[in-house]
Length: 595
Ligand SMILES: [Ca+2]
Ligand SMILES: [Ca+2]
Image (cartoon, rainbow, N blue to C red; front, side):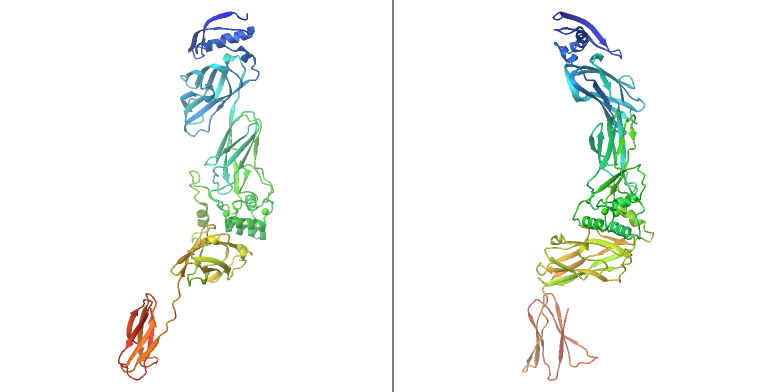
């Protein structure tokens, strides 16, 4: 039959009754009888596009089935776009006839558009019948590849249950397979207080490999093929701030566990405390916590987060390994509930603060909650005060830190800040608190005017001190000229202000200090000059700027001495003379008061 011209007329009637084409003609060059039959049917589709020429060889070479699927994103109420996808390994697809069903009570169809893979095909789309979408696509040349075939925008009130019921390729002459797509979803929550953890990296492996960042509400979702095998595992390496949830209270709780006076009552606390990841909680974990609080590191040897599958049943309060992945095989239905529990390493107290979003708003910041929970009278107040000082240019000045209300304090942390253009840090002196040593000071930023302090009571019982006790002093050398000053501030960067009384936060009350650089006044020396012929005394003295000098006299000294004012001068840095005229020969006493 090769080489014979064929003339064909006919029509294809769609299943919904609409007519696609009416007439076509073409010349078939060669091919088997079977090839011709295919050629006849396909030519009808091509005919409406005005295409001549046809490769039957491409049809004969189709050995792998085509796969179709429907991807429906997680439905937030409102507009959502579902996608029909196609996987065509070979260039054989010239026409597609798709029938989809959906739940008309859950959604209405807004628009159906062609996907990128078939954007050059012509189409007839029918959505007139509620619950059914029909699409007939035809192209001028065979296409292949993997991608989107239809984009279906729906207005949904609940999950629309869009399913691909039928997919005919080249009028059913090429085998196709509809791959049912399923939804694998879950949530990541914090181990304490039920807060959600946003932006966790979720990794899918198995029949499909994909990584996604979870939503702000802690949720995640993957579209996967039915009957596949999958493993899900979360990961996170950063936080809104590195020390979020990590402070000296956690050190105090770890110290209590090490000492056996307050053993961890939850496996999550143990997992949080073991920041080195060696399945032991010891002083090395404390050293790493301190480094992070000082701002010297931004992670722990074991990372910053740990995740456990939410359905894990712990058999041990001090687990060495926990399952952090969830696996599913032969998945046959949507699965929403692959949840995980996250732990910020170091946060033994469980007061990590999630960023405030709709789901976390009612929880509020973690710190406030833990402050409020410590009794109706409010947490005990502990005052930390930097003392004021005055120093000459280039001289040393000692700035003690004094405490008031220091009762049963088990831990404290804060940063002292100053202006490095005025003061240069020399050393720490006068250590006067149990366990306070050089390892409790973070001096890496001293050149920038910052020293951090993280102290906890090594005996865990709590330390009480009399009010106004100086716990240590910072020694500086003044580098700024006279007239300059620097605030000695108790601040939060790199280390936040926290005080722990017993096993809860106390209220850290701050009193800043000030160091002024001043050229010291020369001592006041007074010369008394006698002018005998005039019977006049003169008092001569050098004045300081802005000071007031009151010169007084008395003729006898006793307990009842009454000093009388002779004169008052305002100082300007120069020498001043105050005269006492008409003085008789008997003795007279003078004094100068400086104001
Ligand atoms: Ca450890
Ligand atoms: Ca904490």
